[in-house]
Length: 407
Image: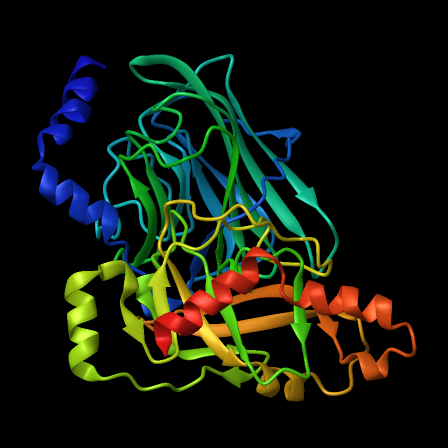
């Protein structure tokens, strides 16, 4: 046991620069998986596995074939050290950055650390739902750390559609947050991986959930930043500002603006003088100009990012310290893409695009359609109220500010 603790401590003597590089440069195989933070929905499993002790594993048949890195598996090997492997049984306690060709491989690392399962700890499973929407839960409950008095609860949820959900609860201190753990996924050869964190306290306090999906990455989108709700005057010939908001796991400078569309509509193409642009880049990095876009901190994301249908699913909290990218679209082109719409109709607009490495992104926000008063009828006082609403208070100043900056 003392030798294990010495080896675990030894790795923290690695140069800090190397550790930071490993943390900040996760690898995604052929952009096969996206990683998102999602709302937790922790499941308590009920079927006990015969797994106890230190550095042990058990084979578990899967209730449905699970496709992982394009390979379908019918069984998994669950380790006391916080991961499951599809390619073979092992229980390596010495976690590494990802990817790594050494065992384990073909693995999901929910919390790869030097853990110990005493008689107060256990691993449980549970099957939820019916085909083709089944979910298989593998829960590590009340697991002890070697050399630390605290304990940790976490789980892997395998969804029949190939989505992987990692969930955590009762998270309070740095060790429980992953300060000596690896969190991520890795292919069967150990050559490609998506690393969420390595020896970094990145898991949030309380309950926390991370989703790995073989589909587009969800990003927070804010139409008309700082306005809530968002009113869209479909008779306007103006510009619609739309922000993709930066988060702890989304650096907006990795977004390729040329690929972004809103409701199928491309960005406005507005050329700027190249010399002026170079001066702006040197003068204010946060005001870096793209065609039809700019970088600045404009607003705070509303969660969840997906599933919006209500125009009040928004906020106007303002800047949060993360850099955002603000994109410009033609209101008339957006209105044309909507077709025949009603006054005051709530519509969810879908955003699509790519990161510079080719990873697809998606997002959405809701607008309330506004039409000219001639289509409303004779109640002019009522329409004057709507006309006032079109300014959107702070949002109107924000839009004018953008127009001055980009003209």
